[in-house]
Every structure is written in C-alpha cells, then in structure tokens.
Length: 375
Image (tube, rainbow, N blue to C red; front, side, top):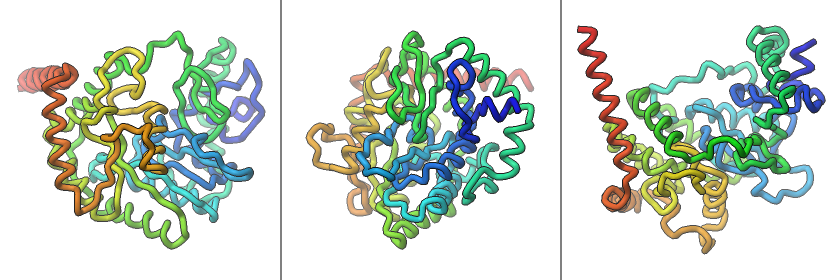
C-alpha cells in the first residue's frame, strides 16, 4: 500500500529509501502521533517534556548514556499541561524504569482558555503499539495520502528538509546529528531574522487568548512531581527562556501581572529554575543568524545546552551569571522585582522593545478599523 511504503509520519518504521521516503517533511505537523509511537519503540529512560520550545531547543544527545539507555525529546507543539501530563504517563507506561525527566513549563500551558489541540488523542496513549484507529487513518485517510504524495515529491526533488532519525528533537543547525531531527538547507533564510520575529510577535499579539490560571493544571504539575517522587524518577523543572520581545508581548497584552502570579503559584509547588525575563541571553539583539534564538518564542540548541548545563551543573562557569534562577517562595518576590528592574534597563538601551510597541499599535488600529466597519 502506498501510504505504508511511504510512511509519511514515520509510524510504521518502514525502510527509508533515498529518493522515495528518506525525508519526511510532513512528520512534524503530526508530532503528537509520531512521538507517541516512537516512545513505544524507543522506550527512553530520560525524557524532555514541554512545548515546542523544548522540542526545538533541548538536544537528547546532551546526555552520555550507557548502552540500552536513550534520551528522547517529548516536547509537543502547542501543548497544554494536560497534554504534557498524559505524554508523561505514556512514557512511564512504556518504560517503567524511567530515570530522569526534564520538564520545561510555559505560562500558556496553565491557562483554562488553551484547550487540547485537535491532534491530541487519548486512545493512542499508554499503548504498547500504534492504535487501530491511528493505523487506519494513516493507511487510508485522504490527509495521509496527500502527505505521502508530498513526501514522495519532496524526495524526488532531493529536498533537504525534515530529515528525522530519532529522539524527538528538532534541530536547525544545517547538519544532521547522530540523532538529529531536522536538516535545514543552508540556503534558507537565517533563523532569528527580523522577519521571523515580526511574524511571530504579530501572531502572538493578534491571536492571543484571554488568560485564566487553571488550578486543575497546577494540580497536574503536582501530580507529575508526586509520581516522580513515588517512582524514584529524578525530576527537574524550568521555565523556558523566550526572547525579551516575547516578554514585552505579555506587557502589551496586559498580562504581566498574570505572568508574575503564575510564577508565584508554581514556586509554591516546587523549586523551579526560571530562565525567562531580561537577562544576557534573552536580550540578544535581533539580527540575522542569531546565536540563541530562532524567533521571539523559540530558542536554539545553544541556549538549550546552557539550560541543561545550569540544571545539571549549576556552578558551571560557562553559563552567564544572570541566566537561570532557582525560584522558591522565599525568593520569588525579590526575583520578580529584579526582572522589572532589568526590563527598564533593557527598554532604555535596546531598540527591540520598540518593535513590539509598533506591532501592538498596528493591531490596535486594525481592530479599531474592523470594528468601525461593522458598525
């Protein structure tokens, strides 16, 4: 069968053939599907959990694991806390000897307004193989057939996009690591460009949902912590470092006080490493070929390595002193005050804050015009 041979989402583990199905450009639009199935095959002993920020930024090859042990990036696009928790359960169901979890949390994961993504499916989780319904969909659905066609055409044209070989993480380094995920043609526009930042910030401001902190999702975080304690799993939690302009987006949307309150609530549950704010990494000037960022929301592997260095060796001298603070109820207020102060300094010295204000003003004018046109 065509879809089985092409295997556009890499769920049947069919042989990869150069010029036929080696490259799978449609795979990362179906991460909730293929990652659930890869976990059943790989049975990782170390996992990274979180949103697309984790998916793009944390490299499983960071860990030098013994034979028969594997690290896997289980970051998921647009995941909320419920979805993260269920994929955590899925990992344990397939690897009872899970040893370590690195969990990256984000503000929006905890909002009641962020519902489960359409791609989320309970039936595929805590299974030992692909579910009957998923297999049926991949073999016979029109969507899968079109994905197979696109995959074949992509390979016939010798595209260099999306070469995925395992471990769940997307890499955008221009080459393929031993367990790298995404190979990007060097002729493409450099990541971290003003275009990428403008597009990302415009979308986040224009399509932002109201925020309402969910107590249920805070409880899900507690549940992950309790399960790890019961099973002897080493757990480290951190807040992802989106770019300073992304922080300004929260200010523009009037959500900064909600953001701070979320941090207070999280710090009551467990000590959490906070990499967000206005530090020497997050304030990297917007330019072509940025070292630490792909866009305002997503950080690069170089940033991810610094995060892991801090989490696993907090006194490492290669890490900037201001990158990563372990927040607790005892220091959270002082920490929040410092971030406010750091913001004021950044606004005075960087032109990048103006970009957010310009985007916000354009969106406000557009909304006003649309509203007046309807009246």
